[in-house]
Image (cartoon, rainbow, N blue to C red; front, side, top):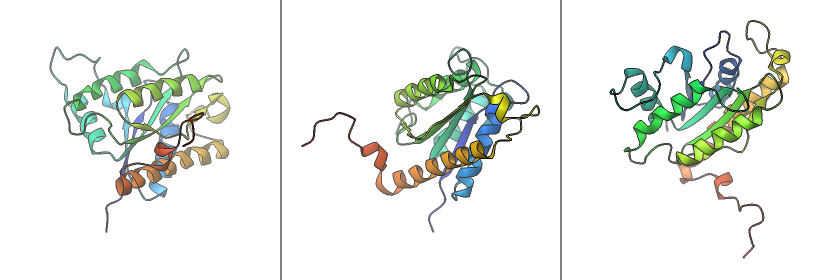
Length: 203
């Protein structure tokens, strides 16, 4: 029997409670419900130093890189700060340069699901930033993304998710990432990766 795909969630913020971490955990529940093995990397607990190659590689950065390398798929979550991803999330992604000399390098053939939380309604701008990063690291951005707007209406004061419709959508994202991971494993690609770009000429 084939092993289940491993879906690793990366995200959260330095704030307590972290709505982006709560949202990530719910999406990871969706992956687990779709029969994936799962892991959550809380950036606050990981406590990464600022990225630099000048002073060696800290153990926390090596753990992050090893977890990402082992993953069949990823879920990324960041709060939206000033129209983009948080500094903590970008710093973690910068440490993925440790995967440059792996074979295959970086996030090659790993589907990535992306979600954000925002106090306002501009969460898709942070999703766009994540998508550029996924492309540069040779991963595949799952088309289904989810930006949670107006987080004060969706989470309570303790950071718990109180909107069932949002929870269902987040779990759906986790399930979709699992489906993509299984298809990459079976076929080396995924149907959404084979779609003709919008406006492309027909043969």
